[in-house]
Image (cartoon, rainbow, N blue to C red):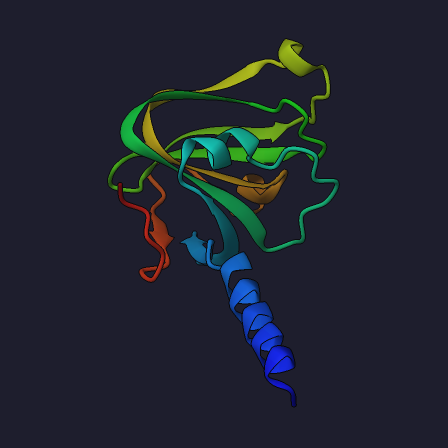
Length: 149
């Protein structure tokens, strides 16, 4: 193998590792989900916009700097979602279930947390009902994932 080929192969392997570096898992009501992390402003703003599909058993975990009342909207989100809000102790404090997609741009409604929250988990619509989630349910986050600021 030529040195340039080996170098290119190593670079490709490093880049592919970076592509999944933001992935981790969460557990909720005994079910484990693979999640993408959104823990900075740009990632939180982009969220799941323009995705046409999200595989079963997957989601996105949004990590905020502090616990406070939050509101999420579905601007340019093409799939229905459950939006689950958790406090500093990772207890479920609010739920917005079966939130419909919205492509109306700035006319999309906001979905509030109704209580201070720090973590927000978006799952495919119907998961909260399937898990029979009630406020107070605990969220476990992969200990190998950095979620602190």
